[in-house]
Image (cartoon, rainbow, N blue to C red):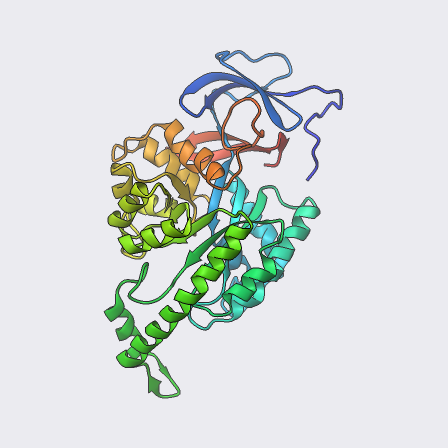
Length: 392
């Protein structure tokens, strides 16, 4: 991407005026000045439009959103289960959806290791990172794409896979996850056993004893692999997340390991323990919009009602963060104001990821900005800038 934010080439700054500026703690009608990719000044100037300024017509101007977790890149690699798409083309399609949701910094959450014997995720890991690197170098991506390693600790191959990619400059955060039936996200063990009993491979059905033996075997693998993955991430100073904490013991294990963020807690008890242990909590924006978890776990509204939710991530719907931020502002079911809601999708995730240069409209920050229109309560981006360059 180019770095030229001055269309005149004569040092003239970009001025955005007559906008409802959503600051970290309030909304003001005014303008801001952008120079060399940074916010130079924020002015409470009312509806005045200086000569040469861009008139935003009284619409909202918010900081570019920061998404700590989206699985969506993988979906573009496999648009159908048996179809594998070109990696760079998939990255471009993914980027279009990301920027369309007002996200200017995204952590593409790439699975490392496999939970149920599907080797495809291991095969595509490095090519996906390479494609992001190539597309970034070629100026093809409108959002800034970084990598979140989602490390499946019940796969014995995970540490080697992590070692292969963890030193790549795009890799910035890591999480540890354990996808086993009866544990964390998938707590309905009996339902899982019933489903497996109905699946026959060459006439052999999966029995309860086989399922229980598999759980015991993979749990033992997890107890060995998890410390290795945590050590690899900590040695490189990467922020660490613990995925799908459900029991108090899950949170305490993570906190004792030095993990700072509980990602998608599955129960109110886990979220409460995370707060007691000084951990930040990430929730799924789709959960807010649907009013419930897609897995039957705790609703994010319950966490918000107790002040236990710090950050929203898009998870599996790229534009859900933008929709959720405005929903919790407008809906009588929630008590958040817009600055607080925007903090959850911009400043808070940026700080959690160690990106203190963005996520807030204030002098000195990166000029990652989104001009928002509203129609029938639906927010939609009209213009988007990244480091002062209009990208949409």
